[in-house]
Amino acid sequence: MTLVERRHLEPQTGTAFVIQCGQLLRVVDPTGEQVSDLISFSAADHSEWLSSGRTIDYANTIYLTTGHTLYSNRSRPMWTIIDDTVGRHDFLLTPCSPETFTIIYKTTAHHPSCFENLWRNLASFGIAPDAIPTTLNVFMNVVVLPSGELQILPPRSRAGDYLLLRAEMDLVVGITACSAELSNNGTFKPIDLEILTDDPVETQKDPRRRSGRPQSDERAARASE
Image (cartoon, rainbow, N blue to C red; front, side, top):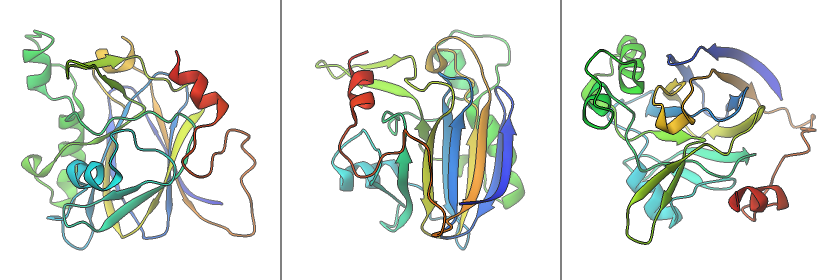
């Protein structure tokens, strides 16, 4: 793989950029236990966006990992998950917003939020705040209890873990280092991003690399944590 661009997100910040069809996006947790909210729009038509509902419907699972396709609201593939060293991400919950902290955290002062970081960075692409849907919350660990209640647990990601995605169309991408205390085990940490081109001559040497959907021994061990 050839590195095209690398970005470092400081805690509680975000960014936006264009990625071309066929390019790869690696979302890296450099220190561990840090969530990253990701959303994308078709570069050709911003009314086509990454859809939680379509993706979960077609995958028939809320736990998306290597081999799964992420679909748009028009049922077109937007991303394919190529590699995943964690195996637990959330696609149910919306990005934290100022209202999140008022309603859930009972915060009265301004609190940084993923929603604000996303819309401020996506504004330069002409994407309005109300256009931002449910995000793919990379590394977020959400469990559904038998009662139907959602339980947010510390992320399973450790230092250097990553999610590798391939863009299936030209995309405008917004992404954050999440600002919610509960999602990140109480602390705020950075996120690293890499945009890559797939070089078929080279092979990735990472010993944690997975192919296909079956869980590895490491992922199974994490599932019991």
